Image (tube, rainbow, N blue to C red; front, side, top):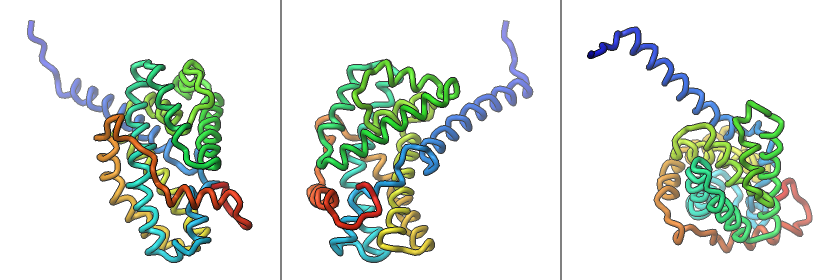
Length: 247
């Protein structure tokens, strides 16, 4: 017998789908929020050293520096890892998860960059533990993977995987969270005014979809972490006399 769907039934179904979509979006926004207690605000990722070297000195140079870092660094490494780790978490492929985590650890070019991804990864693990049932099993998944230690991109991918948002939306959220932290770092270290910071963030927001598309298209053998000038500046930052940030 053919059953007809009434308008009321369709409205209920649509409302349910809309609620699930909204919940997924909110979880991604939560992960991207500077309020997430993982310590991202305490890192400049080489920017403070670039300011000390005179390479970044105003709004234009800060925007250009961060745009290059987005495309040449983040898109080809962390974003690509997150793109691969989300489906691996959803499939329960712990071998793949460990492989990606190991790659992140081995490709951090300085001590402070490695310490950053380890500290933020452990902090996200602790955040998920404190959430309990609200963490949607993220803590249990991270524990089961036995990552020692979990890196931030891989741990964040675990939390994003539980949100059931699309991989692309998850990467957009990750990239925007990175951009917001680095813009705040530029406001403090260049220094820039709030309006200049917002203009810089707007420019990065326009670039993020391109970076995400690049990351999604990268196969394993094209993923890389090769930013030699940034590595040199980070190494110098480890002994920089006066610092606001941990990297």
